[in-house]
Structure formats: structure tokens, C-alpha cells
Length: 387
Image 1 (tube, helix red, strand yellow):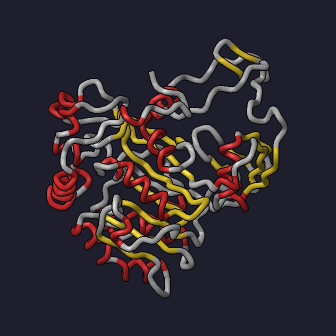
Image 2 (tube, rainbow, N blue to C red; image 1 turned 120 degrees about the vertical axis):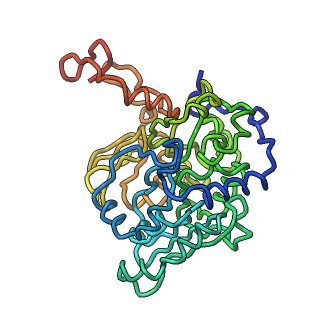
């Protein structure tokens, strides 16, 4: 049974990988630097799956990215948070630089994007096309740079405390043996109110030793997958507010041998957002009204799997969500005010409390796949829920 949102799993139960970190780093570098030459070489869809349609503005931006950069990129669809103008963004495991060049267009000339990756051949591909993209985008000077280094040791690459507004990662944290170190470093380099917005692979259970030692499964993003519930414990330990599930999509394995090794464990690609919320921003629940106007989300902002904000519509939110919106780059996009005593527990149409927040990506997949509820008359409850 999965733990509900907010229920933490004791840290001592979270396993530490037994394989030496240097060995994992070498094998992953070889897999992505030598064995994989294009996305079609992958044996699973873990590193290419996408959870939702791509907006036209993003598709247009992608078309301006050099074809070699796109061909050598492996990630879980797209990782593009909203409200990016003039932001400083760090991409962990930037690979050939596809997401960096996409974000370069969204942050604009006043923003900046840094990509860091441990695989030299990938960094070389990214650097090779900086001038091409700056000319393509019409920029006077580069607003991107690429570093070779480890996301567990961002300080070694010269990245300072509180120097970025947003940290993103696209299907890469699973390749790091020490997930705590990655989140700890991301938290360190984020400014107060900053966000870590990332897609990654998660498992339905803690992985067996056979899976965790399988070389190909490491390269395919599965052997290093975190049990999704452990993310909540690690995030709390590091200092982030509770993870907010955004999207999820199933992962399929198209290789009989790998299926046999994996057994009954299921995998999912899921996007989460974590916020570095200052203590001064924490208060009670609130009521928020989205002002509208965020590029690409002018009328409606799908913030996560639990909150969708429509322009001009008042929404009661819990204390954590109010603090996130109040302290982050979204503050100017909302009217935020204190709510009444009942705002933290709004009622359903029949006087029952609304459902608990969805934090389990596997549960989200089940809900997305379920047929629509059978409804009674508008505003009443049918046999399968309220309408």
C-alpha cells in the first residue's frame, strides 16, 4: 500500500546502492557516449516518453534547435516550467543541450541557462552549436553555457549558493548513485523561493539487487530509479517543501530479457516540482486568483495534478500551496489573500470533503485511465462521484 501525501518513510529504510559510484559513472558515460548514437538505440521508452501534448510555441522553439543536438538527446519528453522570462536556469544532466537551447529562447536575452553533464562527448556536441543557436535566435551574445561535471558536486564546477531561479532535470537523476546529494546541491544553488522542476523515472517498489546491478538497466534509466515514496523523505530531509506531482506516463520495456530481470516491478516517468520556501512565507491557508497572462498559459495554468488555476477564478488552497505561490516567481501572477477558517478543507457538492491530494504517480495513471464518472443531475452526486 502506497503512503499518502505527507506520510514519510523512515530514512533508515531507504537503501544505499552497493555499487561504487565511480563504476556507475563510468558505465553510464560509456553507455551514453559510445553505445547510444540515437534515441532509436534505446531498449525502453523510459528516456523518450512524454506525458502530455507539446504546445505550439514549444514545438516552434524546438524546430530552431540544431538537428544533431536533437538526435543525440535522451530525456523524458519535455521539462519546461512556466513563467521563465529573465530567469536563471540550471539544467542537471543537460546532455547534448536540447533543453538548454529550448529554454534559451524562453528566458530571453535577459535570462541565462547553464547546462552541466558528466559525459564529455555530450558536452562537446552542446558547445559546438552555441554560435549557431545565438545567431538563429537573434541574440547579441550567448545566454547559455555548458559545463562538464557531476550534479552531485555542483560546487566543484564553480556554481555558487543561491545563484539560480530554477533547476531542471530531464530523466537524469536516476543515473546518479546518490540522489540525496543531487537534491542537496540543487537546494543549495537555488535562490529563496526557487524551484526544482524535474522529470525522472520512479519505481513502484524498492529495486532488487539484481536490477540495481544490471548495467544495461542503469543506462536505460531503470536500475537507478527511486521508489517514488522515498522522494518525499529525501526532499523533506534536504529542506524542500513537499514534492508536487505534475504529470505521469507509463514506461514500457520492449526487451524480453530485461522484462525477466525487472519482474513485477512497474516503472513510471513522472514530473515533480519542489520549492525552496523561506520560513517567512509560511502562514495559513489562502485564497488565490490567477491574473492570467503567463505566455502559453494565458487563460489556465495547470500547476500540478491537484491544482488548475483559471484566469479570474478564486481557488481555496492549503497553507503549503499558498506559501509556494507567495514566495516564488509566481507571486506577481496571482492575487493572494488569507482565507477563512474552512479554506483548508473545502467541501464537495454533497457536504463531503474533497479527495486527498494525489502524490502517487501510479495512482494518477490509474485515475487518468479510469472511465468518466456516471453523473446525476448537475450539482448532485451520481453513483460514482460528484459532478
